[in-house]
Image (cartoon, rainbow, N blue to C red; front, side):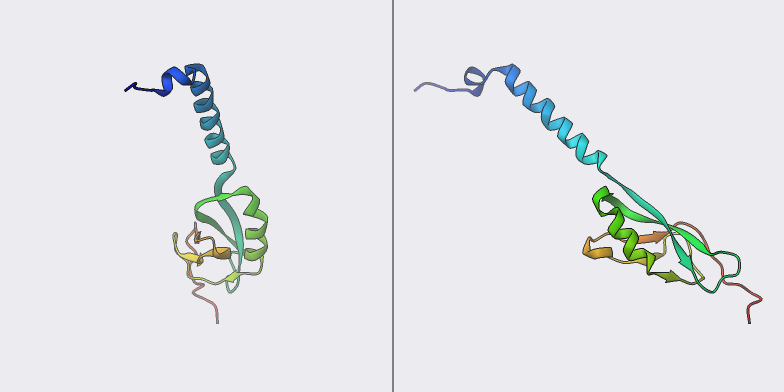
Length: 110
C-alpha cells in the first residue's frame, strides 16, 4: 500500500495562503465586535440626569442601533452600584447591560 499525504498533493504555499486568509477573517470578526457603552436616563435624582452603562460582552456593531433604541425607552432610579444589571438579556442576545457608576439615593428628597 502506498501512503498518501496532503503535503505531496497540495502545495505548501497554497496551504499557507489559506491560513493567512483564515486569520485575517478572524481579525475582521473581532474588529466588528466591541463592548457597547451608552447612557440611560435617571429618574428621581436631582444630581444626575443620566448614568453610564456598558454591555457585559462584546456586541456586533450591526446591533448597536437596535440596542440604543431599546435602551432609549428605559429609565432607572437610584440607588445603583457599579455592576448592577440594568437590562438583562437585551434583545434576546444573552448580553446584559450593567451600570458603570455608583448612584446614591437623594437624602433630602421628600
